[in-house]
Length: 236
Image 1: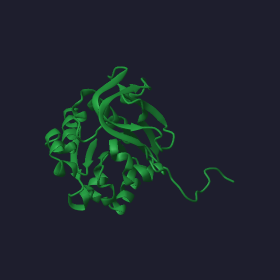
Image 2: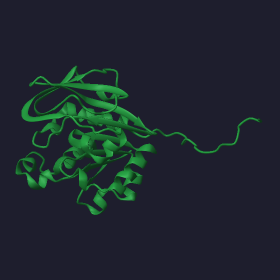
Image 3: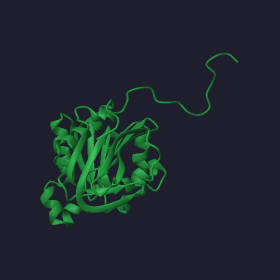
């Protein structure tokens, strides 16, 4: 299984605090623990040739992990179309934190994907609401993050196929923070934590979730559906 971790990599260049927290970029931090989990991982960023997502890269990617925030509109529409086609054909997609506003996530959801937010460094507790789900394997009842950005309801997404995590924040809000979807032959997981100025991706439970999610999203090896005009199987 081949994993591509894509990150716009703009905060790391503009904000010394982010560079301090993630000296190798958010993509580098994520790639490092996925590789420790025995996965074949490459990274790509917005400023790479063809925005890091050439036809060759996409064709070889089994699961694409996506982090973006301040440069959503810079992602080319033709690349979004190609990612969508790959998801429909079976590629897994893991969308992280502010990637809820990415072009690809909004395209696949068909809604605004808007929400409430507040950056106040408050405690987030992610409750496991589907303890039988493979993405939660190895976790306790909840994940406790000392400091995170708040996302609050209403989250304008379609009802998830499976709701895996619900977050509570110290300010009182709650949020559907772990949601799965199927689109075509592909599987999608949205996971909320990961604000760029907090060391969220060094948390062992968060890492465990993402390793589990990548395995969950692995393409299923099976026959492709056949569409269009069809000859009868039996005599009519």
